[in-house]
Image (cartoon, rainbow, N blue to C red):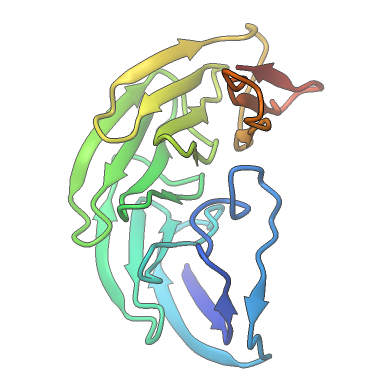
Length: 212
């Protein structure tokens, strides 16, 4: 199977598109400038499967997208592939990009998963975290660098992005199956001390889970 990746001509507002639906609140909105209906480039990628992963952009504009078992880094101006990372499993989620350019993404095997932190410049693995259930959830990064993602088996993870150390892991209910991306609600800081951020995630069932 060949994937034709196209980039429309235009300029996204800062900070680009670093994760699934663009930002911590999953608004899917970014202010663009000089957006024209013109294709800049297209690149054919051999993937061998469908492409559920959405592309994200890094601090320098590099485009990252998962296809099959591969994660690709692509030049934003020419569409050339800068590097390819091959995972043990397939990418069913979308990457989130840290402020330092690190690429965070989960991969899924038949009954387990692996969450990766990958050097955005070289494609080298910085750390990885094994999970006991597949990962379809795209990660979200809080302003303090904390990562949040969930698994199909119903676990929600809070992870230190720099090291991969798990802050906490909770399983809200035995019937939950998470494949959505967590959103982060930041409350006003005019209180002392400010209230903690609230993490909200929708399972593939009939209700939302919220925690802080």
